[in-house]
Length: 497
RNA sequence: GGUCGGUUCGUCUAGGGGUCUAGGACACCGCCCUUUCACGGCGGCGACACGGGUUCAAAUCCCGUACCGACUACCA
Image (tube, rainbow, N blue to C red; front, side):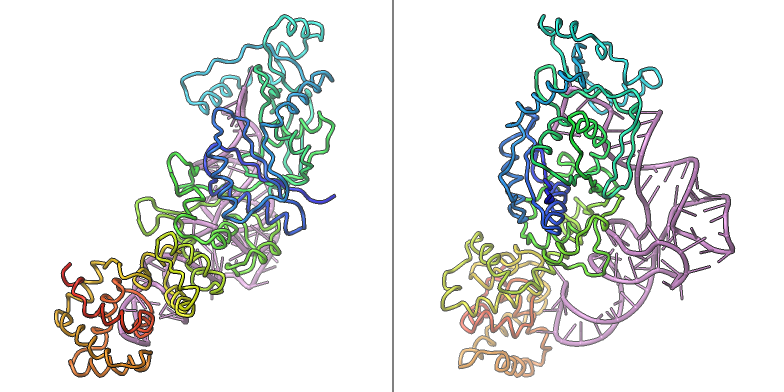
């Protein structure tokens, strides 16, 4: 039997970082053993699920490169089957109708209500004391026929325990006494999560369920449903959670866009880099290699490398520099700088296009220049956005000057206001404008002025690129070209700022 | 409250009885290189939650405590 795994998000928000990692691990696991990777959208919570969210999740997955091997399953389409399964269990006596009126919602938070109730029931209430649990079939049928609303609950045995071997957490056992007669079907006829998941996983022939650790205790309930349905449960593996700094839950409400995958795409992250970063959160190849291609991740991935403790996604919302995890940023920079040029070129092109800096010549007569320049400037970039921001001066005459760069490299040396235009004049007669020739001219000029090379070079950098950082200035002159260099050295724009 | 799980540098992690004066990465700091720099090179700072056991030997095994987390719903 071939291995089949699924990623099953509920569309109540965008694809967040924890879900993205769950998708990644499922994907890596499937590819590692030549299995099938499936996607199921768990949209049974009609009140919270939105089409917009589904699209956002799909976009996130597409960006990361995890295309499902078969058609996407929408859980809401299977409600009829889930209902039928509940009815079947009812007919077989494995479930019963509970005529207890639905509890009224309180104004307290849901979590608190649950904890309160649990405390109150402590040592008082048994999990099996539902008055309708042992109602005779005749009585139950009669009440139902009379139109009394009811929910269908699974009849959990009095004694015994469920147990399974978790792929990450090891043996997990739970006494039946700890598990209530869970509701399968609501009184309004809607199936509940645990039933829906089990039914769908059976129908999709899922063999391995890899999901967040928050489902670890749910697993016991689900195993009970598998058993009632007469099916063998699949293998389970639970993943540690990804938490916010301080060890708190990472949530959309308090952490905002930082948890959304689309944020990273929109901030110039390379999917390959983010994937790589995500893989190392909660999993380790147990080697010292950290930069890994997808193929390397696939072949190194095993459940044994997954941790049992939660990981923290580290960031500082109050800092512009650390708006997201340092390591994610570093990883992306590493990819931007060292990826094979041919692989990153399409991404650079897309970035320039969206910034309206792309010119068709870059693919024709200026192809060589473009590739050489892109390769030159990426050495100090962190994200794709840098190509259109810090790198803007290479592709456009309309670029901004960084005030700090002007102050530090230009205005601090007032002589430069006349020197730079003079240097431009030295460039004018040059027939070959390349590294060695430029160096000779600039050095000669520097000596004549009795100043330091750095003063001229840094001043020129600010004038030519608007920023204080970049590659070797000789290479910059070459990349900007003779004509544009001359124009920018002569320009007084920066001086008037 | 109960059940279950977790706890190695600030963060991601290696290590699973002796090789640990605990290794790597990010961040931070310093030095070097350099025309600048957020490049590169070298170095530094920095952790086994706590308390008991077991053992010749414990970061590693056992117990307890603390802290964190999940679940405890006619949410998913």
